[in-house]
Image (cartoon, rainbow, N blue to C red):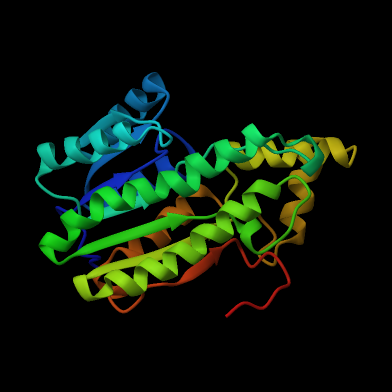
Amino acid sequence: MDLGLEGKVAIVTGASLGIGKDTALVLAQEGADLAICARNVERLEETAQELRSTTGRKVLAVRADMTVPEDIKNLVASTIAEYGRVDILVNNAVNSRAALFEDLTDGDWMNHINTKVMGYIRCMREVIPHMQNRGYGRIINMAGGAAREVSEHANSNGVTNAGIASLTKNLANRFAKDGILINCIHPGALTPRGRQFMEARAISNNNTLEEEMEKSASASPIRRLVQPEEIGYFVAFLCSNQASAITGQTVSVNGGAGDGVHY
């Protein structure tokens, strides 16, 4: 199936590892050129070179901190200068602390909100006018499953991710008339950040990390942990021509974990 991504330009934030890196890889494999960002310059450059050598696509690496508005302005301006347009934005960057409610400081809360909620808002604020001018755009917002499933170590995650899901629907309704489709994914993949939360749970439950991972896998209907590239596959589909009627949706890609029924 041709997804129609050949020659498209995609910005992926938080792309130096985990879901961001694998999503960037899948998009490049489908023919998209990339602008990727992260805070760690060395790891970002390593990822960019790996993506170039693996896929043969152009990859622009721009250091950017989602809490710094000027960094985001520079990221988008650099992408426009390099490629002339932005077709796809994947909001993925996050920086949070896995901790009990009583251990989270105001600084922890504000850092998470500033990085994720405001970071996503800042990125969309910058790219949407460019997408409007061309009458086309795809925006994917990553928002962890803590928006739907409570966890004692993911208090700020629940608040921020529920907010992202709400924001996604609001903006999807607002900008669909401009050819911009905006969707949200609750990713359930095992990532470096996911390991941090499992490590915190393992300590609380007096388990090893391996035991906690096995417990999570056993609780999943598919009896395994979702891999980051599987999130990338779904992102590519949502950005494709075949998903032209899908917008304002929040979909869990987590192997069916959880018992809730969501509409």
